[in-house]
Image (cartoon, rainbow over all chains, first blue to last red):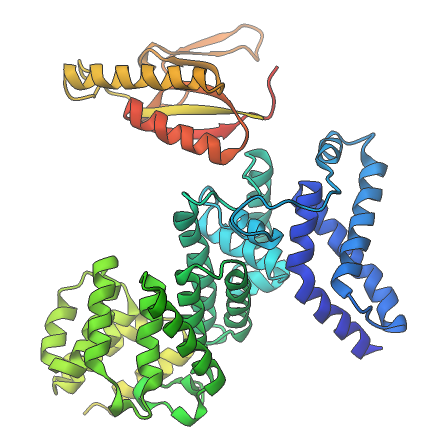
Length: 403
Length: 120
C-alpha cells in the first residue's frame, strides 16, 4: 500500500504544526509533544492504509498522540522527575484565549522565534516544529551536517525548557516588535529557498513553499496586521516568478524573463494583498517590498515598468530602513530612470564589497557604460562572492559576452 | 516561578568613579539601582542581590587535592568581569528579560540572565 503510506505522511505533514502546538500546550514540554506525535504517526501508518484516512485526521492524530503521551507520563512518572514535573502541567481543558488571537500554532511560532534564541536556531525550530520538516531535511536545506543541526535544535529546546521561554502570544504592547522577529524568520526561510546559498540546488521550492504556508497560517491568525499581509503579498509575488527565473540552470533577470511563465493566480493574490495594505494605510517594510513587486508584476513587458513608482517606493523604504542593501536596490531602479552613470555613483558609495549583489549591480552598470575591462573585474568579483550555481552561470554568461 | 541569576558584567579596570565617568553619574547610577531594587522588592521578584568588590580582590581555592591550593586573582583573567548580581524569582523568561533590561539601564552595565536549575 505505497499510496496509502504516502497519503498518511502527507496528512501528517499538513497536521504536524497544529498537532505539536496543541500537545505542547497540554503537556508543557516540546520533547513529550514530539515523541507523542511520532507515536501517533506510527499508529496511523498501521491503521489508515487498511481502514482509510479518518474523516477528521487531525482530530484522530491529536487524540491518539494525547493518549500516548498520557500513557508515557504515567509509565515514567515514578522514575523520572522531569516527566513528573511535566505531568503537573497536564491540562486537559479546552484552551482559553490568552492573547489577541487564539491558536496554539501562533503561540508555538512566537516561542520558536523568541529573541532569546540564536537566529539560526529560530529558523530551524520553526521548520521542525511548525513545518514538520525532519532534522535531516533542515540540515540539507542549510548545508550543515545532520548532527550539527540536531545539536542546534536540541540546544534550543533545552533552553526553552530550562529558561522557561513562555508559550504564548506576546501582549499587544510587545507584539509589533516580536512579530517583526517572526516575519524575519519566515522571510529568511523563503530567501534561502529562493536564492539558496551554497553549491546545492539553486532554488529550493520546498523552503519557499513552506515559508508561504506558514505565512498564510500567520495571516489567518492575525488578519488585522498589515505587515503580515505585506509579507504574504511579497512572498507570493516573488514565488509567482519562480518558474521563469531559472532557465537551463541559469538565473534569468527580471527584464529577460518570459512573463507568460508567471503564475497569474499568485500575482492576482499578491496584488489583492497589496491593495488591502494600501487601504489600511499603515505602511511597513514588507508592505513596501510587496508594492515594489506589484509594480514589476503589473507590467506586461519589462519596458512597461513604472520605474518612477519603483524609485518612489524605495525612497519610502529608505526612510524606514536606511540600510546599504535597500540603497543598493534603489540604485538599480534609479539606473532605469536616470541612467547607469547616476546609479553607479550611488552604488560605488555603498560599503558592500563583500556582497555578491553589489558586485553584480556594479558589473551590470559598468557594462552598460561600455567600461568593459572594469565590468569584467566586477563580474569576476560577483562570481567569487556567490556559490549559487544559477547565479554563477548567469554572471559567467554576461561576462563572456563582453568584448 | 523560576529563579534567575542576573549578573552584571563590566570592565575589570576601574577608575576613581567606578567607570561611571564622573562623581555625579556614579551617584545617579547608584540611586537608579537602589530604586530598581526597591521595585523588585515591592513587586515580589526580589530574592537577593549585591555588588562585588573589584575582581582583583578575588582568591581562587582548589580544594580537590590533599591540601587546598590558593591562587590570587579571579578564576578567569579577562577584561570584562562580574561586578554584581541579582537573584530574582519570575514567572517566565519574558519577565526576567524585562527586569534585566531595567536593571541594566539602572546600573549602566550589561546583564546576563541565566536560570537556576534549582535552589538548595
